[in-house]
View 1 (cartoon, rainbow, N blue to C red):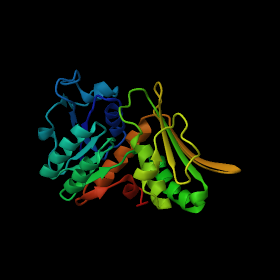
View 2: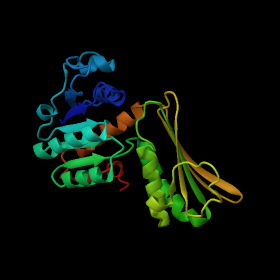
View 3: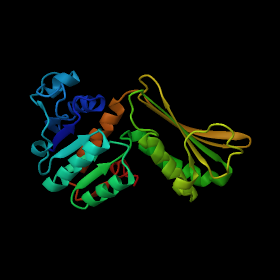
Length: 267
């Protein structure tokens, strides 16, 4: 039975992970982590998640929690996630990471760490979103350059990074399918008099409002018609369930950098 370590266990996603692990009798929560000084330290992770006492106390020592063959699962900030992944590689553990906002240098380091440990990184753990990733590549190739691509995403007011990791991944997929360099064609919002829309432009717009869990729309528009693919997350549990599925899948895997596409057999 794989042993699971949840980092950020008292956060919005961490608490849902703890709760959803209760639906997975083949996985065992053995440690819950939070940052030093966090108000949840010393409290039971299950009680914090609203599922009753589990006997797992929230602690702040990742080096003690991340041990060989354990699976770390976390949705956090890039700096903390990267530090935890270094421990994962050192200990011979495994990891499922839903953190977004990694920079290019951080992504390169994760690739290097994945040579020593099985690490799954996905900007969105939702099963449906990952199916959408596959569909987007097909749509973009079929529609081609005659269709303008616009991506919009909406998240809650507390989200720190923009655009969302999911929106960026969608843009990367579409750009790759169309043979475009996203760094050259991406436009993050418009203002003033930008002029006529360039043919190869990929627009990305981020909205932040209230408690929206997450909503993404990719629009392909041309003269006379528009085709849209939209995903709406109604609960963080859809992300938590995907992460639990990923944790089950990665247990026993050899070192390598994996994604939810691999979990779903879409890679």
